Image (cartoon, rainbow, N blue to C red; front, side, top):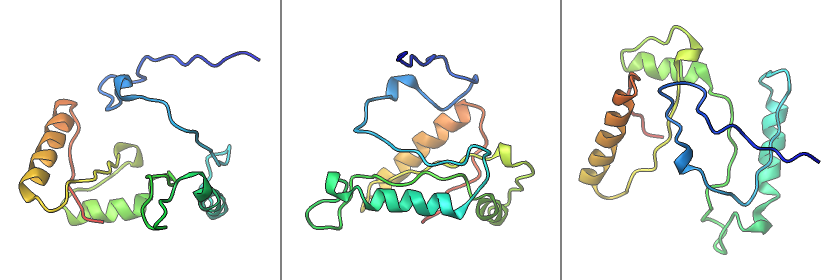
Length: 136
């Protein structure tokens, strides 16, 4: 068996990815269609897989608190195109869209504003246009 040694050079200049932020994880699984097709059955299999891993510690004893384990899917472009439109932006090409998820500190509006300002500053320094924030 030949060990896999990835090339740690970022693929594109201006990438938001920082290799210094990488760390090991307990493990991960991947379910994907090799042709890149979007398919509900693949999502259903992924959700079933996560549900079957709760015995490995993904859920606390209260059966409510999780460790963040979940499913990463392709971007649902129609949803974000509509959200961007409601914020006054038009997404012409799907490849021009990226989505970030931020877990902001609860109960402190000032700290939330500081975190958002820091994120917006980093995004702007990378030459990326921020469309907006939305509550989910």
